[in-house]
Length: 360
Image (tube, rainbow, N blue to C red; front, side, top):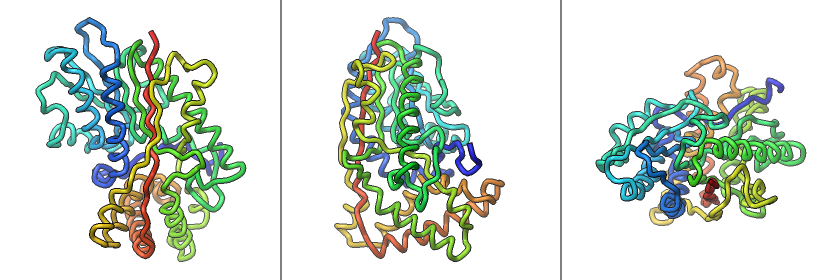
């Protein structure tokens, strides 16, 4: 692999920034709540006294995991009784902001350990493109807005950084990588899940005609990066290396591994739905007419989720220069906010929820 195309799958901005500004993933997870509740009610429980295991694949800084894990526990406890322990494993890359995760798990007023259940939170610093838990050990898997990140960036994107905006050979490379990584993710989870277990995966998706809902914001950010090259804030070579290692999928792509015989690695599909997630910041703007507030919310979301991946292309950031990272992030946010405020627009997006059961 060329030095220009690096292995990468998203690490969010640290110091709790993702927790504060990732309202879109939180909204997507809330749309999946009924599917999660039904999955917990359907999942098989062995009669033994050993702990029940919940795996949160791609926990980030933890705030957006609290509500879904609370739903799972609320539906599990009546079936388990008060004394059977529940282990919750929050899994993310070693470079994740685990300090914030631990603070959330121990002190957030909405933490799921407050209801008196026999629950034990844990954390694992490892990519979910590897095996992270023993075979046949997980009763319930949950993954929200994480499996959109690829195990590696397969190609540079001429003129852009957002894979859905790619064409030609670059688009084909992302399509191949997206298919390979989805099958890899499913295979690893199939190994870890117990027979009768359920896996609920929530993803930002594409409509059948390839729309994502984020294209306008991404185009504004792309224009900002061009300006930053023009005024020598970043170099042209650094700009070329900027690519997001994400691949939003169509519903048909999620279902492709199951097309041949209805199952994949002993996993079968119980539900698969695509929904529209309205932009909550836009709803606020329609009430108050505050363009600056709308643009600030949208820019902070972009910064907390995507900025670290773009910053990895900067030579000084790759060399560990924290001040270079802060300067790039601040300038990108400021310029993007100004562009978004001048052209207010909604970022309604698509959310896909797929529920999988492991056959006995």
